[in-house]
Image (cartoon, rainbow over all chains, first blue to last red; front, side, top):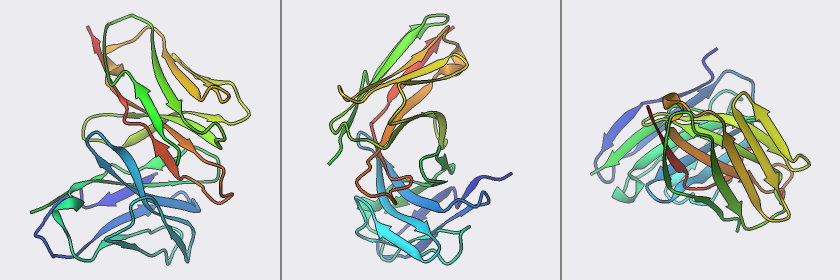
Length: 111
Length: 116
């Protein structure tokens, strides 16, 4: 059972480049979400989804887009990377009011 | 906006000691509270989930309590081991939207080191 899988694990981007962080879960969870983790600030919610075709913004959505075409996948897109988006990104999935499962993270550096 | 605070930021204890990690939150109207463990360079692993109607949960050497009225939760670790060394994160879910799912507000964590 793979759980929540994030790719890539590491990425270096130049300012202005675009990329997609992939997240896939095989537990048939309806809820999926993206967080970023920065030193001294804890994890903050970027975007979330309560099911296929439904997404909404979290606390820090600017500069990021998401879509949810299937239950399994929830990619996060950076349209024009900025140094302020240097962070560790985590994808999570779960069911309502149950434990959340997190991926191993993607460490992104924007230079 | 919910704010979650964890004290202390770092803790170092000798092996075998019992210890308590603290978590406080500003809005007592939470949906649930979870404690997570994060190892360096790794993702988060859920340790215990406490529903808003519960007072505590136990798993092995771990016991988490919840006092909504005072906005506090504690994670008790009995007979600590070097393998318990990690960062422990507390997170709450607000009930402002029934579809909040896994929308967490996280604390910044307590970094625990258990010395052999």
